[in-house]
Amino acid sequence: MSTRNLVLVAALILTIATSGLCAAAAGDAALGTHPYSSFDKDEDCAECHNDLYQQHKQGMMSQSYTHAWDEIEYFELALPHSLIEEKVAGIKAGCNGCHAPLAFLAGDIPPKPPAENTRANEGVSCDLCHSIVGFEGEVPFNFNFRVEPGDVQQGVRSGTESMYHEIQPNPFLMSAEFCGTCHNEKDPWGLWVKATHLEWKESPQAKGGIVCQDCHMPPAAGNSAPDGGGLEHPDVRQHLFHGAHDDGKLAGSVEVRIHPSAREVQAGGSITLQATVVNAKAGHMIPTGSAEERVVWLHVEAEDAKGNRYSLPVDRKGFEGEEMTIASSEAMAYQDIGDIQGTEGFEGLRRDGDVPDGARIYRLPYLDPQGRMTVAQWNTAAFGTDYRLAPLQARNETYSWTLPEQLEAGPVTVIATVWYSRLVSSVASYLGVPEEETTPIKMAQHQTTFMVVGP
Picture 1 (tube, rainbow, N blue to C red):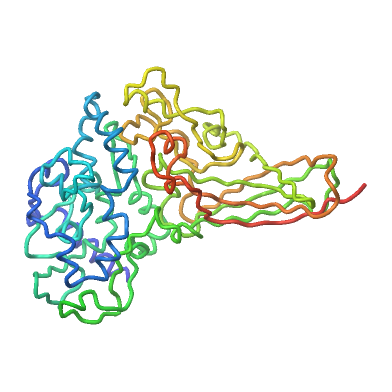
Picture 2: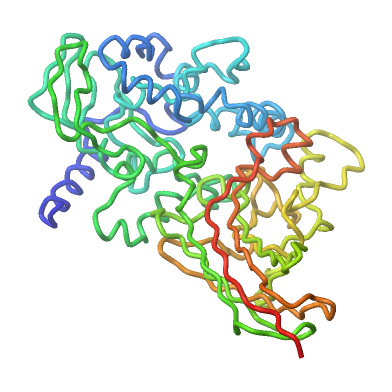
């Protein structure tokens, strides 16, 4: 997109976000302003837009309320906490502003659990997104979108018609700010506990005019409404919304390379290995969003000529807070789960779950008011050292290894693997979260070799 067009789009976004034409309530003030009946069901949209409906249905946008971990987190942690701690009372409704926006707008708070099959289950529905006309204020966050449901659907293309509804071209839908209304979150302590849009603003991708939709809603030739008289277009936005819950999206988003300091070394001698890890694809930090839950780690192993394996611990760099970036099976955290659930004597859970001791973890620790690591983003009073991977940022990690004296001569293969888990395994196990949330996903792998030689 040309600089002139970018300026025009930015001006339109600002106008839409701040104009009197968008007088609808936003954020907390929108609670209870629109009944469920104001919004069409996704199945109604599917009558004309079946392909886009099917894409949306298998993405996390449609599952933002019914997804197992989101259900457990809300009903077993967030909701109980909101009822006993005034500081976080707003999350009783506020969580639903993005996870169950139809319920929030209808004032159905707290929504019934997913098993009750209410319209809260529709999550971020088709009609919800296509009824958003702008946002309130200067920064999109905490569901401060303005929504105007009705017969007019907000779209991205002019000169198109529908038999079912009017279409209003609205460049806001193609802006990163549109996504930021839910993918930025400020907690009761005023901290940006979700900042994906803010991270993007500082990225090379943003400077190059690449927005969220270019990666998560890529354009493809097709017809968005073949059953409704639609036309063929070269750039129909695909409603994939693929991200942290898509293994294919995760694969290759981080790259790793590793090399030895020498190609020959004697048994009992020392060698240093250097691994370079880079956020090669994402226009935001890795991990991003619910970074308090995610675990990204680098594990380095060596395999000798006999097939024996050695797990190598990363060398310490000495920066403040580094201990939280090096996996330890003895470190404990998440004690506030016991506080929230009223469990006396709760000592916490293993901070790093099943991550091997000595592995380097790329994380931003979220700290509760007592300074303990938490997965409850609404209970975050401070942050630890941010050791995540910024867009196109590379980090070097070194591994100093003294080889065993008895190591047999021959090749040694060193394997560096970057793994991803959507939730700390110890937390998932304790709360009964399905295993797919913690099954390690391989993001990248590389190997190198050196020879062990005789005296």
